[in-house]
Length: 314
Ligand SMILES: Nc1ncnc2c1ncn2[C@@H]1O[C@H](COP(=O)(O)OP(=O)(O)OP(=O)(O)O)[C@@H](O)[C@H]1O
Ligand SMILES: [Mg+2]
Image (cartoon, rainbow, N blue to C red; front, top):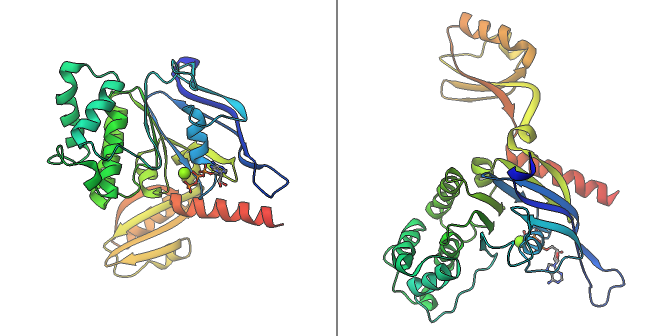
C-alpha cells in the first residue's frame, strides 16, 4: 500500500483513563495501529469495552489521545483540515428533538458542504436511501431508536464525504434496515468512498469488509483480510448431492460431515481432493462445490477471545 493509497492511518494510539478510587490508570487503548486503504471497507471488531469507540473518537478528534498519530488522507485527522472530508456516525446519535428529519438533514448537509440549491434534493435523496421516505416532516422527538439510527447514517453521508466512520451502524435496526446498511456500505465503496466501521454484527462484517482489525483489552489481537483470517489452511470443503448413502471411501477421509436431504457437506485434507471427486463420481453423486475450508467469523472471534481470556487468567 503506497502512502497515496492510505485513507486512514492510526499509529501507536493510546488512551488512559484515571479511575476514581484506583491507583492505576485504565489503559482503554494500548498501542493500536491500523491502516485503511482508500476505497475499502474496514471492520473494527472486539468485545464490549475493547476500545473500538475510543479509537474511533481519537481518530476524529472527539477524545484527546494519550499518545499516537492519527491521519486521514495524509492530514492530521484531529485537526479541522484533516476532518474536511469525513462523515461520522456516533455510537449514540443525538439530534435536537424539536427539528423535523428534513430540517436536521438540511442543517447537517450545509455543514457538510452541500450547496444551498442542492440541499433539499440531497436531503430527500439520503432520507429515502436510509428508509425514511415519508418521515421528512416528522419531529425527531417522535422518532423511534431505529429511526434515529437511520437519520444518523443519513447525516454521516449527506455531504458525500471521502471517508465515512460508522460506530455500530446496525445498532437498533430491524433486519431490513441492517440489510439496507450493508447495501449502502457496498454502494459507498463502489463510488470510491472509504468506510471504517465498528460492529458486533459478525455476519455484516463478513459480508462487506475487505479487512478487519480485532481489538481485545485495548490491543490489536488480529488483523487481516477476511479470507486470510478465516480460511483453514490445508482443508477443502465439499458440497455434493445425489448420494443416497455416504460412500465408505469418502467417509474415511471426511470430517465435519453434515447432511440435509440429499445434500452432503464435509471437509477433507487438500491432498485427498482428487480421490474424493473420483469416489463421488463412482458412487453416482454430483459435486456442487469445492472451496477452501472457511471458519465462520463468529467461530474465529470466539476462539480468539477465549484464548486471550485464558492467557490473562494464567
Ligand atoms: N469517558 C470515559 N471515562 C473512563 N473510562 C472510559 C471512558 N470511555 C470509555 N472508557 C473505558 O474505556 C474502555 C473502552 O471503551 P470503548 O467505549 O472504547 O469500548 P468499545 O470497544 O467501543 O465497547 P462496546 O462494544 O461496548 O461499544 C472501557 O473499559 C471503558 O470503560
Ligand atoms: Mg463502542
